[in-house]
Structure formats: structure tokens, C-alpha cells
Length: 135
Image (cartoon, rainbow, N blue to C red):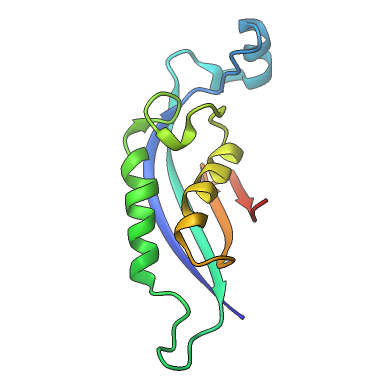
């Protein structure tokens, strides 16, 4: 079994807010991240796939395919956008880094050969990283 990773970056804004909670509850729960005007991050996303190389090609996945999937389905819809208002794959989700990792998994997994997606890692800042290994 081998693992290959591909990293992409995008910048996006968001506001942590749960519409089912009061303004005070949101401020208490999310603190400065509940700023009504939002705030932004330079996200780094790493996608790890797993498999065994085909003896004929020496590859189990063409990295060009993974690069295109991430460019089209993750970076293009999210870069320089509001995760809360403009990114289709985040619709209906509180824009935590945890939910972003799950949403990226949900975008990428169906576009890869079954069972090859192993991990989605989202780095929100130098100190905050979320890893998701699927349902």
C-alpha cells in the first residue's frame, strides 16, 4: 500500500455562527470568530490517496487527475470567496475547519476511484489543523 498526497491553497473568509442560537450564545461559543463582518484564512488543504501501483504504469492514480479534481471542485469555488455565502459545497454547514474538511472529502471522494481517498487535512493557520478520514 502506498500513499500519495497533493496540496492546494486558497484564501477564504467566514464567520462562525449558528443561526439556531441567539446572538449572545454565538458570541460566547465562537468568540472573535463570530465577528459579524467575518474574518479570513489562507487555507492549505492536503488530500492523501492510497493504493497499489499498477505494474504496467507504475502508478495507482495519475496525479494530474487529482490536481484537476482539486482545482475544479475545491479551489475554484472557494478561493477569494465567503465560505458562508458563496461556496456551494459549504451550503448548510457552519464554516468550521472541521466541517470544511468533511465538505472537501464529500467533493473529492466521489470523483476518485472507490476507496482511494484516505485523508483530508485542512490547515487553517500555523497552529490549527484538522484531519478527516471519512465516514
